[in-house]
Length: 246
Image (cartoon, rainbow, N blue to C red; front, side, top):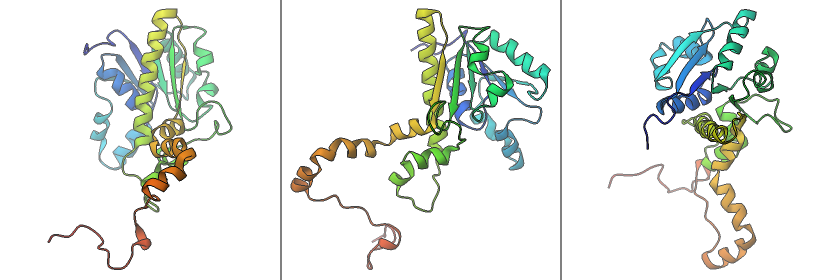
């Protein structure tokens, strides 16, 4: 596979935290020219890492990218973004639902001047449906999709941000698919990524349980009922709390 398969593709990255930056990171690693846009104060993740005296963490998501500062609270900043979007192949954003529309930077606004634009939008619950207006973080996507229940980690939060990072990877895949579609048709399109949908798709135990439901009795008749592992206060007396060295 060519290392620079996306060379010549211009990406405008307006995203923050983990999901959007992971998407543009993967595109950058394949040769795309990614311009990371931040506010004068810095995006939310930068502010958090600065507070923790750990700003070097930003390098784990933003290698191979260039950066500019744009103040979207000013009319001049919004107009600058519109001009940059006209020259871009891909735009990545993961703001709260409705914010880009309020700024006049939604897909419907930008495609008028750049019909070839691939617009990647990552939200907690997608742009349609009854929960489309709700905001979400990684832990919410993992909880609402049943991933945290599959972990059997009641009372503890996940230590790996699958909701953000896997959604970012799927968003990058969607961007590449849309670029391929554009090569065939000449038209860009909206890539709508729902973090909850992505996480539900990873919940293989849920899929397998549903698939096996019609033959559950037959399977248990052969193998016996499934034994759930002990955890927490359910552990019988006499069981060790962990591995022992004998």
